[in-house]
Length: 74
Image 1 (cartoon, helix red, strand yellow):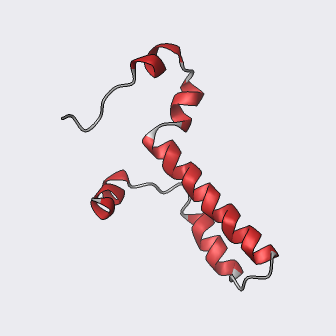
Image 2: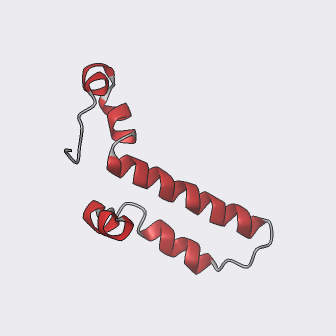
């Protein structure tokens, strides 16, 4: 089975912006933004999360190595 199956509907009808959001990189970026928001919310609620930890996550938010992720998740 091929690793990537093209999404015919998306390629025909979705805008470039929507395709980017739901691309592999877009989904990883959204997941990272979610976890950064969770860390910030927990900190606001009193959980001891160092500001440096949140900053470290924010620093690498856009550094997405899909091959590395695939190796770790396989």
